[in-house]
Image (cartoon, rainbow, N blue to C red; front, side, top):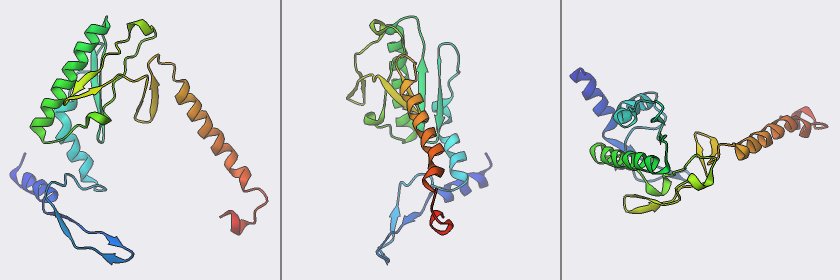
Length: 185
């Protein structure tokens, strides 16, 4: 990368400050020594892609893969047995925590979710995983980029929620019936 571009990105990410107003009264401006990327900037998502590229660069194939969207990282493994999947998940946890140390980023164990997808309950591994000293138990359902996925991949809760939102949207204009145009706005 050209040195000028590196200096420009460094300047973009450094010497950041914050100030807030409460009831119209501004508070003292404070420095943010480790602020990360500015939110709302068009450049921030692009820089974030560079930042987490080595975390996400896993080949997506029949054995697993990884994706990321903004600050959500999702990785998966597939295998013939629950034990082989467990070993794959433990490898993902290990490589993610190594990346965390190298990059200076942080993963929060309490925001980490693990799910085993299987239609046969006896094949699921209910043993918790240890992430940064915290036990993380596999869940029966998780939300990934707005999609509620259940362990049996039936999507019932997701479809029910989507149908409810759709019905609400369809019925919304009916609530305006009988209102004057000025009130309906």
